[in-house]
Image 1 (cartoon, each protein chain N blue to C red):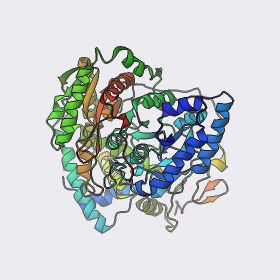
Image 2: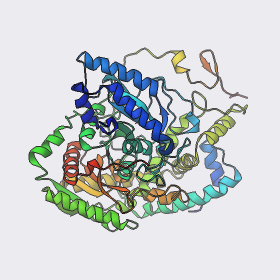
Image 3: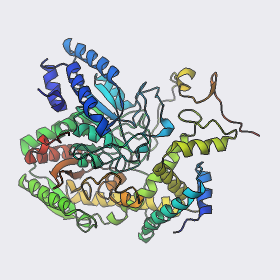
Image 4: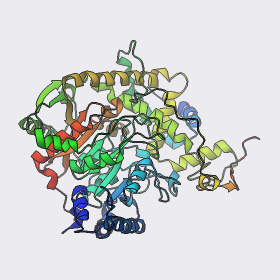
Length: 491
Length: 95
């Protein structure tokens, strides 16, 4: 049995039946990382000693009848999540040797179940980017074709899943950073409703947009991970005091009733967008047919402010980032330029050497847009447009249960292809940004492979706190398509 | 919207970033290009629209005014670049 091919649900079953141990499962993944990660570059930090220690503890727990769902399951975490005692760099020079003194809430939840931490995965620096090329540590290559990007900013986690370096992974999504790399790497990625998952211990990029979410091999695993990570946290005042359902009910719901009675809306504004690859359009058309065959009623809807989403996001996110990243000043943690004998000089030298170009660019945009005289015209106005976008979604969900779209306008582009013009990169986020702006949940499910052998995903969005519909529809779609068996051959 | 090198200088100071002359040129070009695109927002009718600060639906999230133990100086200063016992040391602030 090739242990590295096991999904979370498969591994959990075999562990409970004592047919495999967490130690051999963890070793299988570690061996695979040793063989292939030099080429892929999914991990910034691999933690083999810690992982095997945790696997041993998990095996003991299972032997004494104390197995929980995630006991002994090897997972990888985006290096933006604080892990106590394990280096957390945010792929930035400014935190190159930073070791958190506490765990993020989601990490505590994993630890409480006895999950195994394989390591910390690569990302665009401070989650700013759509290709993982903005990492100060290394680039990550798409396991389907190593000349291509894995997407971003959770490129490391998505690549780790596609390369089978772990059974499940966590990423974060501020403008599409879970869904887009999941789509480019042929795996499932879900961004929960804003407030579903605690952001305590997540290094903030844009506080009103950030969410942590699962990146997994299939929708069943997504449901399991959602059960693990969701829930109100008093340490995060933006976390929603809402009941968390058993998300595996979404799977059961499909098995019992199929997708009968579900309505899916296709925004008409998305069909008139420039720059969408014809293969993506063809994939999307086929996907709609699959859903129709499953009993979904497809109808046209409107999201009238679609043309303004990118512009509004690229004001709001940099503004929030400029505030959030002010803390990295070399005083209390991280890199400090010890040369200057003047405080302001020290701040400037520290930040200019510690932050990469994209991060500095966004801090400058944000600072400009929030500065006196410009606040109303930029941030104020973008926030009003945000309200209009939220209203668009409200009205749309009067007419349908889920909203469909491609995830990205093209399959994964070549490494280095889009690094010249930042704006080109920003525009490629068009399908994913609105979910963050409105706070609604969104899932990316594999929907096809391009003629060049690169995956393409379909996106479904749902009403606030209705991830169950995404799991139900995503599962149905996945089962129907039978693509969950598809994995790239590695070299 | 053209951003001059002087404006870059001012913004960089506010952001506590040091941008050297060669970078100022490139940054000015990139920012002008991005802000031109952002200017499409000016054509949206936002008459009477209350700004949305985010997607959280709660107001005034409170907690009990109860003191809990804090981690203590060893933990808090564990990543200090420069320290003097329980203090972070920094370059002189008051001249």
